[in-house]
View (tube, rainbow, N blue to C red):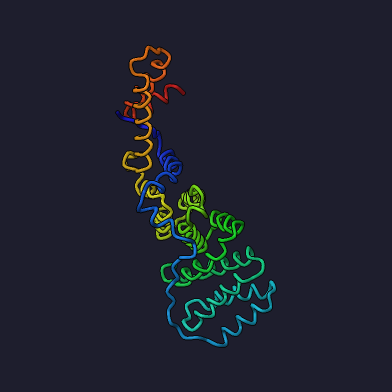
Length: 290
């Protein structure tokens, strides 16, 4: 029996999202990567670079002042010191100082502002991994987690968007089922990242987003986004829906087999007919009904 429940590429992505939790729950290899606790995030490997005691002292001084002017100067110093090996530690301390601000939302925005103004190519910017790991501590607060997702959706600059997606994925993919019932956070974040993917123009960032969707358990979504021409029946979530639907039809057919129930035959007949249509035939029939 053939069943084509998909009429367009957009619906394929939507169906992948709908079946997301079922696939994660039924795929042992996915489950193995998503049942760890959120405290197990890997630490970025930091280079052993020289220190600049004067620069680090200046960062500490500004952090202690804790006012708007000192915040702006910290961001400016982060930009000014980009590419200087002896300022790497001071720049890490700038990120730490901004995230330690009492107003966590403002501190997060300041960090994103600092990242956006650094002209170092993303592939060479080791601070991105450091910032991503440090942001992870914010996401244990549900309100900050939601705020971080909102910021990810509206970022115009590639670096802040890439750091937010990386950090949110690292945190969310390690939540256990108690912290993420029914995989709601994974599903929602993966869905958001589909939108963010199409906003990005940077191929490296787009590939990292696809990897993030994959890490969240959305393998079918990532596979289809990489190759929209793929046969939907090759996707695990679509295959699951096809098998489930076909089994349901078979079970109902068996249940009513041999019974003189004209109403049931009248309803099941068209369903059997649609189930046997090829994609083009189904689309033509739907178009004629519009």
